[in-house]
Structures are given as structure tokens and as C-alpha cells.
Amino acid sequence: MSDAAARLPIVVLISGTGSNLRSIAERVADGTLAVEIRAVVSDKPDAKGLAWAAGHGIATVALPPRDYPDRAAFDRALADTVAGFAPGLVVLAGFMRILGDEFVDRFAGRLVNIHPSLLPKYRGLHTHRRVLEAGDREHGASVHFVTRELDGGPVVLQARVPVRDSDDESTLAAKVLAEEHVIYPECIGWFATGRLRMQDGAAYLDGRRLDTPVVRAARGTAHD
Image (cartoon, rainbow, N blue to C red; front, side, top):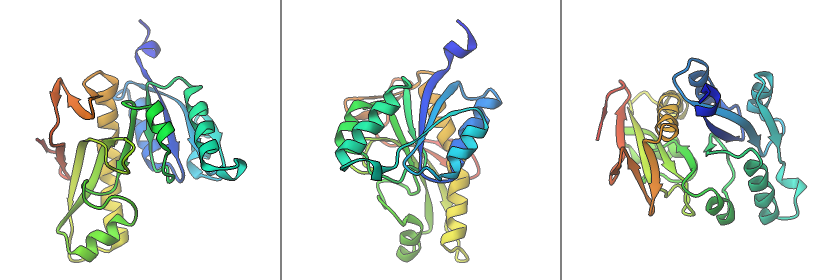
């Protein structure tokens, strides 16, 4: 089997700069992540991540929602576009639209997202602000399988960072994003090598059900 044939094909969905996309691509380039980025798809034609992907020879597609009569039509077009690249995994990397049930069901078990909080805390938007307002001393990011419940799918891997008295939204966001760039490619690698799967609504790693996620501290050590 050739090296290319051994790589898991993925499609990455973005809405912005694509920093997580770039972190994934860097691991592919250095040989530590056995995936092939088949395409990058965005709901925003001017997304900087699209231009970056095109400049690196990756297929890109822009699907502006305004081009469709309603959300259901957009979701169908998005799903058909993604399916056209035959991905083994669909990776949400800063895709800022809530996916409809039909899309989620079509890619169930091979759809992942990274969220900037320690799920199940702070689902949705403005997580850094909410952490600071709550006075939490710890924050982080979570990689999870996507289900119909917003940010509610089984969590696989988390990174935790301390919240300092000097932190504001921007400094906290930067710390969390740096950890996202570590744990997202790692988790995708687990899936690509067959170590990770979703079954019966739960995540399994190395054949063991993850009733709690693997946790990685900012210093890079992991424990269950």
C-alpha cells in the first residue's frame, strides 16, 4: 500500500483565518499526522484560511449561505460538497455556523470539532469572557465528536490552562489557541490510525470507552 493510500482523507471546514487548519497541515508536512487534506470548505469566500489553503495546493470551496433560499438548502449543499471529496473524517476548525441535523447525521461518527472551553462548561460563544466573569481559575479547549446537541457530543481530549489574575480575553484566547494547535492534530491522528472511534454515542480510545476525556495540561503531560 502506498503512503498516500494509507492516509485518511479529511475535509476541513473553516470560517476565518484557519489557524487550526495550518497546525494540522504542518503535522501532515512533517510526517507526524497520517491524513490527506482533500479540501477546505468555508461559508465565507473571503476567509483568510481559504487563501492560505489555495496557496498550498489544497482544493478550496466557498459556499456563502446567502446563495441559498434557506438554512436547509445550504446544509444540503454543504453536505453534498463535503461528501464529494469522500472524507473519512470531517474536521470543524473554526466553522462558525451551527450544522443542521441532516448534516450531522450524514457524517455521524466521523465529524469532530474543537471548542474553546472545558466542556461541558461554556458551550456556545464568548467562552473566554464567560470564564473571566465566573472567576474560574482554569480554562482550556476540548476536542469532541459532533452530535445533534450543540457542543454536546462525547469529549475525547482536553487541554487545560491556568487563568491568571493578569489575563484578559485576548491573553486567555491566545493561551487556549496555542493548546488547540497541539491537541487537535493529536486527536485527529488517533482517529486516522484507528485508535479512536465513536460507537453508540460514546467515544472509544484503544478499545476503551472514554467516560471522561483524556486531559492534557499546558505543559504537555497527559492523564486520564
